[in-house]
Amino acid sequence: MGCSFSGLNALYDNANSGGDVWINENRFRILRQASFPNVFLVKELISDPNKIKDPSHVSDDGTYAMKKVLIQNNEQLELVKEEIRVSSLFSHPNLLPLLDHAIISVKASQDQSRKQEAYLLFPAHLDGTLLDSMKTMQAKQEFFSTLEVLQIFHQLCAGLKHMHNFDPPYAHNDVKSGNVLLTHRKGQAPLAKLMDFGNAHPARRQIRSRSEALQLQEWASEHISAPFRAPELWDCASQCDIDERTDIWSLGCTLFAIMYGVSPFEYALEESDESPQLAIVNAQIKWPTEPNAQYPNDLNQFVTWMLQPQATVRPRIDDIVIHVDKLISKYSPLK
Image (cartoon, rainbow, N blue to C red; front, top):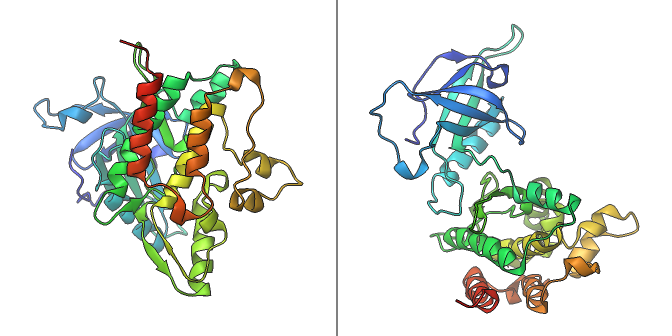
């Protein structure tokens, strides 16, 4: 499917009212709302059986996920365009691909000017997110095996490596269990895909004033989930260099969450007498004590290695991939 802006200049009903939606030359029927806000499960209505698509992303049953974004001003329009641009940059099996998109005019009420909506089309993953799986498993007091933890984490690292090794390097800026789609496969490790590139941008930036530091902190507080946010984004120095290792901190929190179901700093947000910023800046990790939630010390040390409060001593993604490969070899059953 293409990724050009729609040339259609028609008026459409809002997607959440049901019916059909056109994304460029492709027509889709809205089936139901998905588990995410403003995301719908849609089914393509085939009008041209000879239409050529990327075979690696064609749905067997014609179902896809469609994200709808209401655009009310130029700032929102630019944000949507940037999300589309960034999402279209990457092509990796562990990053959710943007298949197609359109920005169209929609009907408005009498007292409002005409608005726009953006429709972004993605593959449908009906098993939900890693967060969904963890909640289900927690209710049953189940945990991933050590090997499953490493296999899921390896896929996240592979997708993130593709972004960090881009030219220029890109940071995802919101790596967390809720942004990982997990598809369960019989006899195989779950398939993990990192999604939501709305906050992604070139990773490296120089901070050279207090106002720039405060501006970055404010942006981070609005866009990056607190339990997964790196220390330098809570308390940014007036003279510093920010790079893609903000994602490495979030990745360490996500590995902890794959193992134990929550971020290592979730407790600081839930307990009124704890300061989340203080806990995160000082890397005060709260390890679970339940016997059935124990993993080899290798994994705990792996988490600690990524959760270095000083970004300059935090490992980079290539180092992480090498280490997770070694751990997978160590904990894989003997052939």
